[in-house]
Length: 258
Ligand code: IPD
Ligand code: CA
Ligand code: CA
Image 1 (cartoon, rainbow, N blue to C red):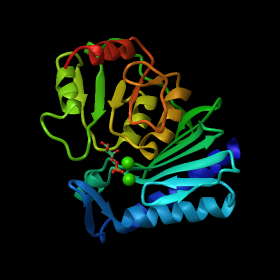
Image 2 (cartoon, rainbow, N blue to C red; image 1 turned 90 degrees about the vertical axis):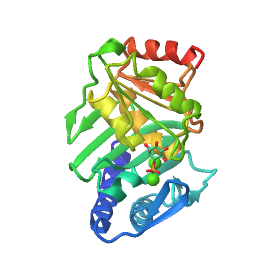
Image 3 (cartoon, protein in one colour; image 1 turned 180 degrees about the vertical axis):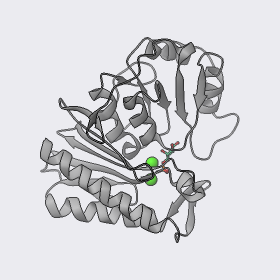
Image 4 (cartoon, protein in one colour; image 1 turned 135 degrees about the vertical axis):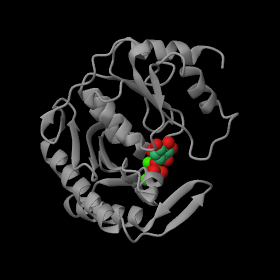
């Protein structure tokens, strides 16, 4: 597993290098309303893919920018978001990251999330713990929602009657604060690092979550669906917390009528 973790780290650094290199010269295209993409997204994915495919030519690859190499004979699949937080990147809001997860036989086992702005490398491998720049990560010890900083990812193009927005509003009086940041991958890394106490979304893709889920689980946090059912990276339904009673409190409020 260590070998794969080191490969994920090197790939994430290469991706981050590309994001930095493009930061003053990219142009922006709207894939759909409010869903942005730049040359940096494609160039970072290319750099990550080239490196990993060079090492592991028989593995499967799944990346946000049109990358889908299915390898039915391989138990390994890399799940890549070359730039999570493109809207932040475009506006110069420094909260975006490269996210690289790896599945073995359908289980998420390796995660690397790299924040090139702060030079922070979050790494985790199943059974091996989680680190930030080589130091062990610790989840927060906040146990009550009323004392918690929680965060939600809303759909990119949303509206006041979207159920995700209603759920967000409903949580405001229960938590100490509720944030929306623009990078699901960093949110998960921050739950693992104890900088956030909980995170939920019902609109994410596998590449937003794959790496971060390994990080949260390796610090002893909880990752489920919003209703407490088992998390599935192929379904857009994620609740990740520090594993305290906050998890049950959030589930309880999600179960109430909106
Ligand atoms: C987005 C971010 C955001 C989430 C969106 C994602 P992108 O990823 O993770 O936090 O709310 O749903 O699409 O498009 O910047 O890679
Ligand atoms: Ca993303
Ligand atoms: Ca992306």
